Each structure stands twice: as structure tokens, then as C-alpha cells.
Amino acid sequence: MKLPDMRQRSKKSANTQESRKESYIQAPLVDVPNKISIQENNDNRIDEPVVEAQSAAEDDERVDLEAAVANPRVVPGTKDVLITDYVNKLEGSILAQKQHFHGATNERQSAVVAAFKHSWAGYKKYAWGHDNLKPLSQSSHDWFGLGLTIVDSLDTMYIMGLEDEFSEAREWVSNFLTFDVNRDINLFEVTIRILGGLLSAYHLSGDKMFLSKSLELGNRMLPCFLSPSGIPFSDVNLGSMSAHSPKWSPDSSTSEVTTIQLEFRDLSRSTNISIYEKASHAVNKKVHALEKPDGLVPIFINANTGTFRNYATISLGARGDSYYEYLLKQWLQTGRKPDDFLIVDYMRAIDGVLTKLLRRTPKEQHVYIGELINGKDFKPKMDHLTCYLPGTLLLGHKFGMPTSHLLLARDLLETCYQTYMRQPTQLAPEISHFALTTNEEQEIYVKPNDAHNLLRPEFVESLYYFYAITGNRTYQDMGWNIFQAFEKHTKVAYGYTSIGNVKHIFNTRLRDMMESFWLGETLKYFYLLFSDNRKEIDLDKWLFNSEAHLVPFRNH
Ligand code: DMJ
Image (cartoon, rainbow, N blue to C red):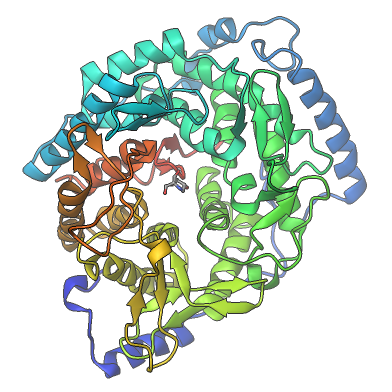
């Protein structure tokens, strides 16, 4: 596969743009099979079991869930088998194999490691054991009270070969990470960051302590699934083990309830305890059964009724994004079965993106993904969050998705790059807006309230996939430009900070917050992007979850 040099493509001739447009139209849209053969051991197969059988199974699952939440320190389905005893007795092929990494091998990777160490030093000095570092005020912030930055950083340190830092973090997790915290946490955030971080640390290091911690956390999050519909409540108190909708709304976010399955399935398959996979896969089934015009989902769903909110926005940005990501990644995780409803839903959804959400700016023909406000009114705005999509599309294409996905991936990657390069800071804003008519002065512009940059990873993530899959080093150069912009505008004495304004190099408005995903995701993807070995992580064996934590492919 040969991709063009993106740096030279900002103002291509109308001819080229026309032929690109053509290629979308000519590319085959998804061919959804009418009759699909059933394979054994495929719980995601399209021809669902009959409804009565399903509800009987649901009743049983609910009883199991209720029993499981009675004591989070014991193994579900047992009265008194302690998690640590159970995990210590696990043996054989189910166990993780220790992985080996050699550390930085070139200057760019060394610069990323230095950025990581600088961030870590500030966090250690002023925020150790707290969720986030506030690097300007030299203080800390707690969101969940779970030492978020430590857990989110574990596998990054492991991959970078930072053995001492990994060991001190491991000791903190072993001795001080406790989930008996009387505080509401968000199911999605804690799943992708903490559960994902612990599982990834387990898979890379082979250290069973991380698996025991994962199991207790998994148990404490199970109350979320005891909603009337099985669509999980968004929030749970890990101490009292009671779950509920967010305080501000009766609804959960669609992307949140559909971005927990990789981790819960991995927990089940790493332990042979099926309850986590069952509860989270039930959510897949429910969402699959709902009507989704053009395969696209409204961004809110009600945990009591199990239905989408009427007239909710459709977006591949906030609250919608990773629904699409996890359709593909779950299919990859479970052995790429052809009759899996998850991949059929993914292909339908990308067709829906192509036909309903994709637009080009009128003069320069930048491709972007807009939103449907109230589910119908097109709005030409794209969150930076959507810049994960080029990477995910390319990953899908590597595993057989159609050419239309590849073409969209390439064009969208370029637009995302422009959202960085057009700013004086060369850092992207949180949200970009696009011209609809030729009368508008700028083709890509930023509104004052959207001009912040939170050190987010999505575009670097996509660059990583493009480099890892194609081997084209152009993507490394693009990433290096952005890394240098982060160095210049977000590095402070005791870490790196979010900024309030990417539009002015002398007025960036430092925000005093170092998000955990800076260490967990952004720096990890930079490090892997700059690797001399593009297969440092083998994408035929490993998946990155939505927070860049690694889970292995599972065929059983
Ligand atoms: C991360 O927590 C994850 O990447 C999530 O999927 C989206 N938001 C942040 C990073 O931007």
C-alpha cells in the first residue's frame, strides 16, 4: 500500500480532488450479506437467539450479577474464594507472557522519553498518589481518587523501558491502590483508564498482582449493569457499590456504554470468569437491536428504558466516537468472524459516515466529518476527538475493510493535520469549524470557546497507525512537528499543561492541568511513532484500547 506525501497535499489541483471524490462514489459500499452461515463459538452472530430464550438467559445473568456484587473481594460464583488465591492458582496458557522492550533507539524516541520523565518527575513531586498533576500551582487534582496518572502510565513506562519508574509505580499499585472509595466514578473512564491500564500492565509484565487488582475493580463496577434495561448506568460508587445515572441527566452517553467491552471481555478471558464479558456483551446486543438510521447512533441512551434519546445529536466526536472504534476492535479481538454483527454494524456505520456526515470545504476540498444536530441538521464542526478515526479506518482496512475506508482515512488524516498546522502554535484546537460556502473567509476556523488544547492523543494515534501499517516515514515527520509544538507551548517547569488558546503564541493561556492521557496515550503513541521498528507492537497480536492500553487478540 502506497500513500501520498501528505505534506505536499494542502492545495492539490481541482482535478485531483475531483478524482478523489469520484473514488468515494465508485468504491463499493458495504455489502451486507443476506444469509450468513453460523460458526460455532460465535456469541456475536447475526441471527440472534429467539427473544424468549434471551430473556430467560437475561434473568439468570441478573441473578448472577446480584450474587457477584455481594462481596467484591471474592470470585463471582463462589462464596468465599478470595481473588488473590484464585489468581495465584491460575496456570498454563491462559497466563500472560512477559514481554521485552529495549528502550529508545534514536533521538526522537529519546526526546519523548525525556518528556515522559519530565512529566513523571513533576507528578511525583507534587501529586504522587493523586489523579492528576496541576503543574503550575504545583498541586494535585482528584477526580476518582484512584491514582489515575500512575495507573494510566504503567504500560507506557514498560514499553519505554523505564524499569525503575515502572517498579515504583508497581509498588504503589500493590500497596496503596484501593477501590473501597466512597466516591462516584464514571464507568467508562475508569474502565478504559484504570481497568485497561491494569490489564495492559499484566499482559506486558506477566505480574499477577495487576490481574488481582483488575478483578476486584471489575467486581466493583458490576452494579452498573443492574439497570432495568441492562444498558449500564454511567456512574458507580466503588465503595458502596451502588450505581446510577449521571447527576445532570437521566441518560448515559452512547460511546461510554459501548466502550467497556474490550476490557471486560479481556478480564473474563484472562481469568476464565465469564460474568464480565456476559454483562458487557449484553450491551452490544441491545445496541445492535436498536434502530440506527444509516448505522449511526444518537449520542445519548437511557439506562432505564434501553432506548436512544429522541433527537439527540449524531457525532463521531464527544459521546459518539468510540462506539464506532469498539465495533471494529471487538471484532478483531474475537477472531474476525465473518458473521459477527459488530463488524456488520461497523461497516454500515462507516457507510453512514460517508453518505450523511462527510463533506468537503468549498475551495480547498478538505474532507471532514460534521455532526447532525437533533439527529438531522448538519453542522460543519469536528471535534479533535474525531481524529482517532483515520487510524481506526486504516486498521480496519488492514484486516479487509473496503477501499472506501482507506480513502476516507487518508483524506481525514490530512484534514486533521491541517487543524494543527494552520494554528500559529501548530497545535490543534479542541473543535474545528469548516466553511460551507465560498463566501467564508477561512476554510478551517476556530471559535474562541473551542481554542483550547488538552494534550489530547487522537491525531498522534492516527499517525502511529499510518506509520505502523504503511512504513511511510512521512508520518513520523508530521508527528515530529507536533511533538515540537507541544514542547514549545505546553512544557512548564514541573510537567506539561493544557492550554486555553492555540491561536496565539504569546497568549496561550496555560491551564494548570496535566491530563493522565498525556502519559498514557499521547507520549506512548509518539514513542511508537518514532520507533525504528514500526512493528515494535505487533498489530496482528495486540489491540490498543481507547486509552492506548494493550489487550491481546483472543480466539477463545
Ligand atoms: C481519552 O481518555 C481516550 O482516548 C478517550 O477515548 C477519549 N478521550 C481521551 C483523550 O482525548
